[in-house]
Image 1 (tube, rainbow, N blue to C red):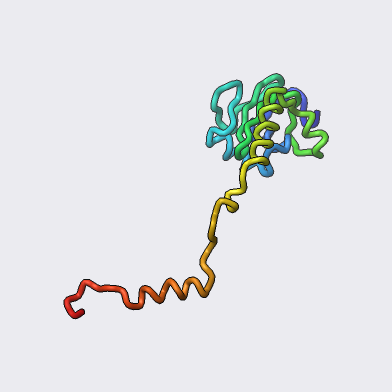
Image 2: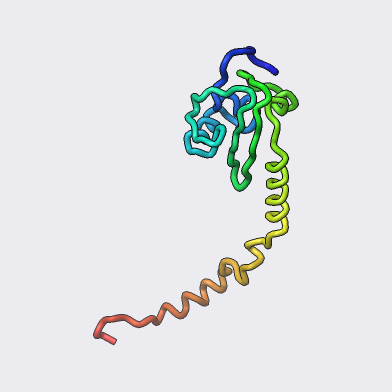
Length: 139
């Protein structure tokens, strides 16, 4: 793999180099928020990785489980980045099932009978409020 063999790699830097997050700052934030676990434990962004470690990360609704296969200090092309990790078969299966469920789920907007009122409907609604009652004694 790329980088300097034998030198430890911070988890946030590795996540960025493996192209799992767009920026290193975003990777660091996700680790700090507890959305990334190393070998079943929450870690800090400065934690060092080694080959064979298991990572569990949550990206939106999807959760992935990865095994570290290589270390890299620099971000390279996508084909090289994909060689840095291997996704477990259970993780692939779970992700594909969730994606299928989300694809088949009903569209939330389809459940709405009426959207926002049109300009005419808003005016009609306002007409009723012109003669609204008041708590004053004058009426």
